[in-house]
Length: 295
Length: 264
Image 1: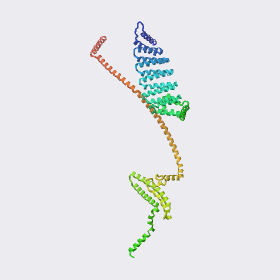
Image 2: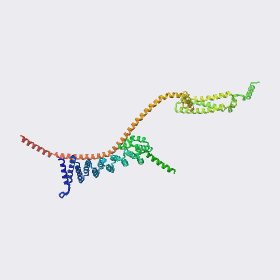
Image 3: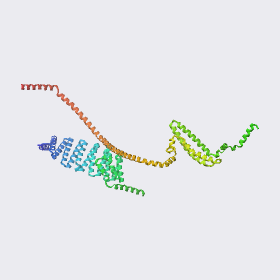
């Protein structure tokens, strides 16, 4: 009985919407209602595929009735059901569509929330897509001036990058996070973001980048006056001297222990590989300079 | 001969033999004899003046002037010590008309001078400590002299003390290490607190605009509710108008009549 009823509702609604010779305009209002009822019934019956279709149609109906908010809500439900089905492309499409609808309403927060939900689901299955969705979500919020809300998204995106071991991308994301924090005067988060970026560069054996990053960050006054700056400079000088003990000791300090746990894990694993490379780079640089001076 | 003649004769004889008189000779030869005597006289005069000043200082009530006077006395003493050195040199010089004994006495006099000079009180520590050589007024030479002198004595005492003092030092080091550890723990705790406080600050900053939005929305909803309530009240009042009440009452009576008729 439960299976037939929603099916009947579906067929009835379909009939209402199909344009034939007898029907010149679709009756979306009643059709949407029927679709909604059918979708809920399908979901209770755990027939996800049909429920998803029903929700999609309901959403279309709401769109026709020019209420994008309800349409977006139905899209989200459809996407959640797609997650149950495990069809990741559909998940991403549906969530994107939902966020577009939310944007139509002019509500950026739910839009980014929708994208964030989708990205979280796709973290394991399709991490690249997930990162893209996170980035879009952050853009929506920043356009609307709500950077504060974007911090969690930045964190999640950075974690995904780190899991994928794309360290340069992670570091650039951290720097973007720093910029967002700067705009809303969240100095603590900003300094932590910069320190995390430097640690990520060091973890990726990229000493030059780390130094460049540190020099760039030193231009920013809030960073220069912070504990994180001191920690970063100590870390870099320990790297230059090749002092492993010092690096390990610094990784245990409270400044680094207050960062994100993924970053802490990286920091504890420092130093990775050749400190000598870093040192010899420095030495070569110095030697080159000396020769120039002599000649 | 008369008395007057005798007196005149005595005067002439005295004048004739004047050059043999010792006192006058001394004055005559003052310039020849003494550099030494002059200097000695000057030093003695200075010593007396310094003594008088120290007496004044002892009686003085105002501390600042006491200090100033003592400083002056110390300066005078230093100067006199230098002059004593010069005197010593002069004392050894052989001067015309001076006997051997007088030379020796001169030396003794000069040797006695430093003690007299040092004995002038100048407000520093008591004379008893002076022998120990710890006072500031004594010259550095004296201090070195004493410590070099008492070296052997000090070393014996020294060893005895190091056993106690090394134990004390060990304890001290241990307590200091414990204190360092404790302070380290406190500093870690404070760091955590600081971080927490910063995060709370940022979170609150995040919540402020949200709450403002919430505030406006709730205000709007509240005013809408008020409006609705007022309208509802009006509607209910209308419903309860007298005409409707009378009709209700009449109908009730009719129904009661029918029931009573049915069951009677």
